[in-house]
Length: 304
Image (cartoon, rainbow, N blue to C red; front, side, top):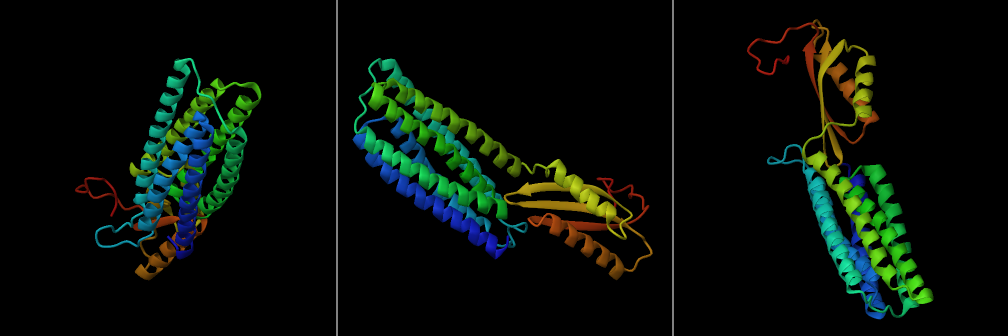
């Protein structure tokens, strides 16, 4: 990971933690003023945001460390581990919010909601801060490909719905005395959180399980190799993602009469082309003489 990408990821992590601290303080005050469950749901979500944001910041820092003797492929998998933890925290908060809302609905006597206007102002500020953070996170994620920043951005984007729902709930309770809508909005917010958490979990799980690159990237690498001068064939193209880095391994077939220096130049040129097309990749190429047969003692039946 480049130094600039690391700085951008860290800036997104710090911004996320600062926004989360601000929102927790604002919503805690708003809850005391309004007694609204929809605000409590948003507060619980922001409290979880703070926990996972601090964890994500630590993961971004750890993932940026260079490879060492114990981690020769780097530390980027820390991003997927942090994203997996985020998803579990989000699911937990969604379950707590849903349970509290169901209990209030079953009680038959929704608690009165107070200080509606104060709550609406706080939730409005929350929306503005959250939207600004999401825009920055999406810009960083597009530039660096960080799995942690992507997961955090998706989570905060999902927060906009509960915040808007809380405003509508407070507005309806104020004008029409419909306190029951507060619990309904809270359940809807929890469902949105759960859906986002499942998506984050899948992305992180795929990274930890070495899922291959998307088909479009594999086809793109094949086209680059097929059109590259000096490459007479290729096989055993394998890819896996770890954090924000895509690892690419491939055997290329060259004229066996080439000198070692000439073969190296062709391989190095192909590697540079792949990296230009997919800059967040780690590319390793193995060179085989064209037409060589696999050795019978090779258990993988691969050349080399």
